Image (tube, rainbow, N blue to C red; front, side):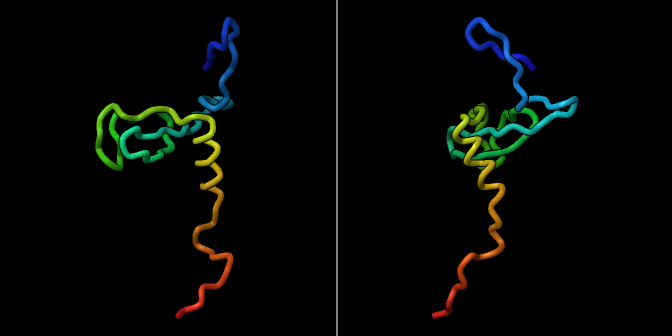
Length: 82
C-alpha cells in the first residue's frame, strides 16, 4: 500500500509485507484497549463502543510490540511469602 508524504508516494511496509497481510495495532479512544488486527474493527472488543477505534501512533505501536516480547510468566526476582 502506498502512502502520501507531502508530494512523495512512499511504500508502507507495516500494512502489507511480501504478499501476506501483517497485523497492525489499533487503539480504542474510549477505554484505551489495544488490539492487533489485519483490519480496523468497527467495535471495541473490550468496552463494545462503536466507531471509537483508531490506528495506533508510532510510539503506541513501539510500546505494544515491546510488551509482546515480555515474558509475564517468569518473575525476574523471587517473591517471598510474608
